[in-house]
Image 1 (cartoon, rainbow, N blue to C red):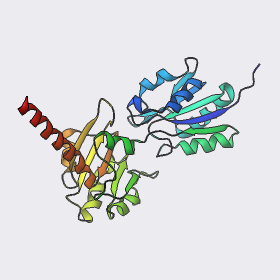
Image 2: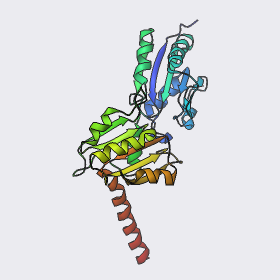
Image 3: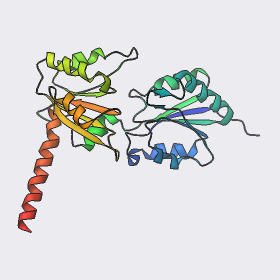
Image 4: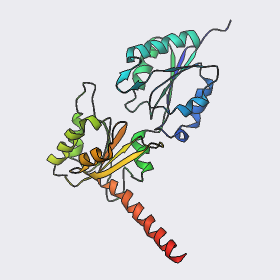
Length: 258
């Protein structure tokens, strides 16, 4: 009888578009004995999983937890020692607000081997899919990526600091705190700063609202934008309209010459 070698590999599934998962991640899924996957993982990715592997949904939907984090940690260890290679499939990149580091620490303390496969973070890919660069010569030299809600369910203090900078600001999990975010930027007299909110980014259900600090709350209400969504604040948001305008001009010329 072969001895089970307990191992945890934390894998980033990417931001939603199934084509944005990495080749390395696919190869790990093919080798898995157990896959624990989250709600933000595109279900199409499960077709890459070893057909003999156990698949367990451990995500959160509509504010309800199927498993608490402590239970997930224990499940990783239990399945690792009973079945072998556990793959923890998480949306985006597991080290960017994904709690991947916590799960690896727990598994390591219990004697398991651990590894990580980075994923494409929604903080980068979702704006890019809408032609919004996080940095652009003459507009932004840096960017912040901040969680909108801390462990204590409060607004991150880093947003206050980011509002004082000239950097692009990307806020994840911030829709429930949008009014407070707007207020912080208004206090810095950035009322006309462009803002984009992208819901279900890189997927077929993607929706986008574009406005300014002063108008974005009305736009969210009009377009009924909600989680999961990303908030982008900065002059780089205007790049999207510039690209769209150039495309319109080219299409118009082609139509007239036809």
